[in-house]
Image (cartoon, rainbow, N blue to C red; front, side, top):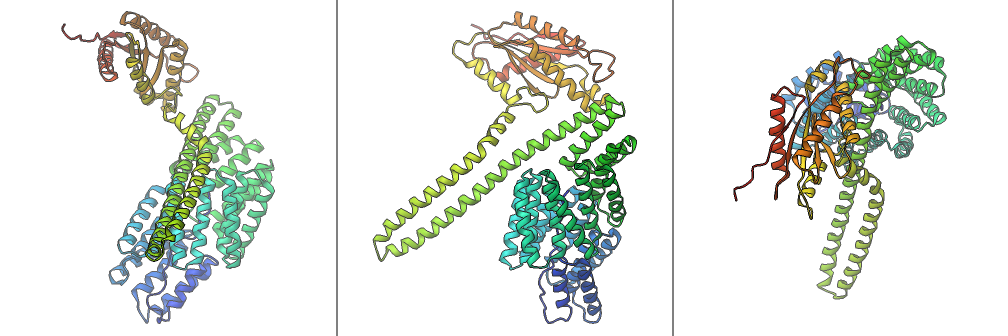
Length: 618
């Protein structure tokens, strides 16, 4: 997990003449340097506001305290929320309600409830947009973009963060723009582009040092250490985590200290120094108790599980890893979840529980594959957004130039020729941009095309692919009679309910492999969905098709499943068969085969039935 930068935006004072306004403004800046100083400024502002009430300023001061407590004390944060809700009916700035929603979302995100956090952020964006409060929009967009990144929606998250950064820059809020820049790097790190993330962190860090933003430096150094950690650059990772730890201790930022210590322990784990990692993690655990951060606790448990495995404390290692998995699973942290499953699989194997180890390894593989597919999809989506943005910017630049040149053309005809050359130059630039993006996207596009036609679980052609090939077979030149089989695993729901979906998934994979082994070209098959597979037998009549169906039924009934579950019986299939007629369609054939399958099911299952096509009267 990446340590999140400060997020709640407290806008510039509407009434700068109030004596508390300067304290609130100073506290908003201090949140990114010294959170304790920000808290003191906010409390001093509230003391002044008791004698000179101002609802807007009091809400802003309490939003600072809400931001401060969201990392430390849920009860104290809820007290600020209640006070702000009571003040809202008296505010002159309705956009401040978005600030409250954002702070509530931050607490839910800290507790690991990303779904509820996202709901708060969505509402905050909507509220701020309705009243056109750009500062509140930017803060809500930043928070929403960060959580979208946690959930794997990198393209949407980057769009939110870049928009937030643009709003901050337009408003002249430089320190907030730097925070958004750090958030963008976090998403690149999660998307697997560690080198890009490292470069953005390095750039942001230089500017934060110039602005003396100590808290943000601690956050960025930690996140830079994570990028080095992901790249296996252990020396660089240790330097970043050590510097982050020193700054966090300087400003008494316990949560930052705990994250930095976890990072140093991860470096020791990476270098095989298990005892050193455990000693460091004891310090991190003590600090973690001062914050409700569920992700931090899970990160520490994961590092402890790895280190305990290294020293041979297998039972304790398994317990720590299972605790981490529980948090990562609820927070949809796929990268850490896959790592935790894989490590637990190794621990279970070392304990001699091979069945549990196999199950954990299967879960690790499943989560890793989903993570990889999502990273590929999201990188493609991100490139598309970047291309669309670049195209629109080029188009806008061209339109503006056209306007200027056309105005000049009214006075001087030579401007037309200049405009033509400009248009040609822009077209060449756009062509170069397209060529660059095409080269960058080619590898991703090839993989996506394959994924679009392949069932992710069984690696068989998916419904779209197999039906498309069936349609081509029926309409191809010289096409003869074609027979199709729909196979359905009997009592498949019972397998899932009794032994779990991982076992059900393995049964589907075994079913697909049995079809692969039995069929020979030009026959082909694919997964229709659920436990149903479609087999297509070109140039085959219904008699031959039924014979093939019987062979498949017998072959599947003979499969031994004892290596994956103690089912106590073999799986069986029911099969519906039908043959094509001239001008037949995939839809009509599927309907007939489904009718035959229905008949087979009601005949007691483990059966083959044929539905003959109805031929038109001559």
